[in-house]
Amino acid sequence: ALTGHRGWKPAWRDAAPRASYDYVIVGGGGHGLATAHYLARTYRKARIAVLEKGWIGGGNVGRNTTIIRSNYLLPGNEAFYELSMTLWESLEQELNYNAMVSQRGIMNLIHSDAQRDAYRRRGNAMILHGADAELLDAGQVRREAPFLDFGNARFPIRGALVQRRAGTARHDAVAWGYARSADRHGVDIIQNCEVTGFDIAHGRVRAVETTRGRIGAGTVGVAVAGSSSRVMALAGLRLPIESHVLQAFVTEGLKPVLPGVITFGAGHFYVSQSDKGGLVFGGDIDGYNSYAQRGNLPVVEDVCEGGMAVMPMIGRARLLRMWGGVMDMTMDGSPIIDRTSVDGLFFNGGWCYGGFKATPASGLAFAHLLATGEPHATARAFRFDRFSTGRMIDEKGAGAQPN
Ligand code: FAD
Image (cartoon, rainbow, N blue to C red):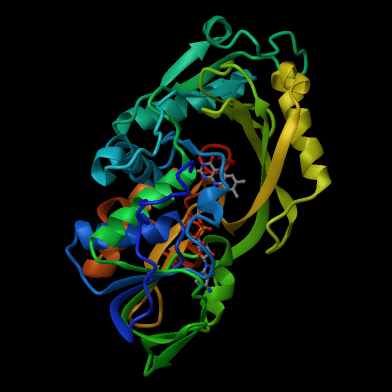
């Protein structure tokens, strides 16, 4: 910056839209960019564009609390999130980009005997799927995180389920890394280009209408996260999704104090420390539907109460910033990666609070679906029809909790 950025090259081209592409990805968030990367690099497809209404990284991919983990219970989910975890482990080599992937571990606190049973079951399910899991007793938790409130009579800490391979990653670097790699594999990344309609004839999508004109498309993949219902409504489709705001908070920078990610098991609160030193934390979604990227005070109060209940020292830190992102909440807390009733139009969304950790596997699975027409082996359960057949993947209280 001291040189006024002289001689710096942009990480990706500012592409202008062409008349048509074989593959059009709508949404330049983590999932859209990862899809473009794997489509070009792994599936060797060409003539690909990513259309982003704003700028790369301006959506949830740049707003989340950066937690990555694969501590899910149900068969439909765990294999997919464990694939994602293994992709995180080699992501920086794959992209040749420092995404600051840090496997500092996650500790889900246990506050009752019943919760210990449930977490033991979840840990066993993780191990059966090849993931790592450890159950700690209260003494072991105290040795690793002595600053927690062990004297809390209402929410006593009885132990923790730990995944050592979990951790955090620098969220916007993930977007930039995928964008740079996709660009280098020939993908056109087109910013300030909002999709405003779909040209559908005889049940097949032919083009998208955008604020930068009509763009012909062989195959269209929509990955617009919190805007899912609005964008798919343009194609006449109604989704089993509601949009809610999720807020995040960061304190002033502190010396290293938190060893890893910690989640409160008796309420909604999760916290980690960024490499700049800020305590990054969050809680529940705001309780009403909204498309505004800002939240309200009742949730701020609830999150701060959760923080004070589990680690009172947080009350000494000054809050620096807070912000919100719009979450695409499905009715069972699990995502959708599927074809739609319109030929050539595919959908990726419903990531609820937890889509950042899914970014690599979601990109790979969506690219697989777009390239082959078949669901990826780990994403077969993420179908629209589970809401009509009743085959829900209801991870409530296990995987679909915030972060
Ligand atoms: P986005 O980055 O939102 O990408 C979607 C893009 O689509 C946006 O850039 C948007 O501008 C674009 N778009 C919308 N409409 C159009 C249109 N008509 N035309 C063109 N483009 C369009 N997940 C975790 O795993 N761990 C966490 O710790 C975590 N914490 C979170 C904390 C907060 C506060 C929030 C908000 C989310 C959190 N999440 C977390 C969830 C995670 O961030 C999301 O599930 C995930 O980022 C969504 O996928 P995405 O990156 O593709 O979304």
